[in-house]
Length: 364
Image (cartoon, one colour):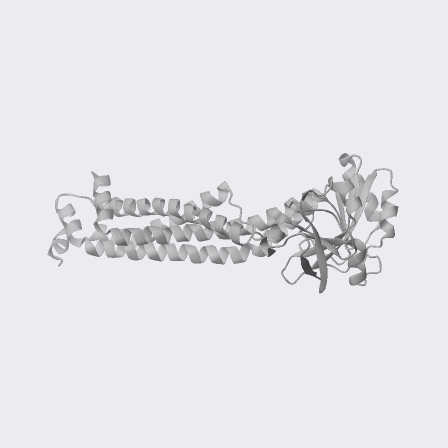
């Protein structure tokens, strides 16, 4: 019986019901997109780091775990020194520079990098042919609408695009290592050094040995570095995410509160009739709570659909922006929205449950 009453009440004001459901859907979509964007960008960065194929990372002495853009102070001679160690299979040195569009340019020796990572796979074009050639991954090429032979502005210099690679290895933009060192006046210095061992089981003893050789430089296992990068990056965005989620919850709470408050005012006489027929306060409370929960569940479904639609649009329009939804994101967005809706319903539902039957029947 109570579900029949709830269903008819929701259909009684279809516009109000639809607007409330849509507002809840927007709240859910906003929460999902913020979390998905934060986790997606971090996971994409980590995927490129794992694609290097290294076991150990040595960084410049002034670098940080989150940016790695400290002053390049690793000498090129270190590559030969480290590679001479019996446990080491291959060493690759790189330079890194941030562009104005927040993408990093990496200077790399393609031959060495290929031996470490298994090589770059080209969707079109091929490797460098000259000192001022550039490679980009297919995501960057799609975002910038680039084709082989185009001119790409890198570090305030024009480079010729010779290859478009599959995404997922080290960087989105590659230039020859020597060219980048010359343009940045590094004098052969490196920003970071990747080390691949014959036996990955020797990572920790090798880190101890490398720290003795380079006591002032951070030395990490790749998994340790990725974990540290993930933790620090997410910590930096936690407050921002909390603010956005808080705003979304507040909007959902206010929308539901107003919708249910007006519903109580509209149905004052109805509540009086129910009470006159013997309905208890808990029965009245259940009616409004079930209405709220019903609208919220519909809003959650719509919100998830909006979020996935937005993800598809962003992927096609802005390929560099990575949004990744996890089951935990959907679960928490649903729980948060449901709690907010219930809290927004308690006051108007409680007010209806406390109404006197005679006063409610006399209401016009």
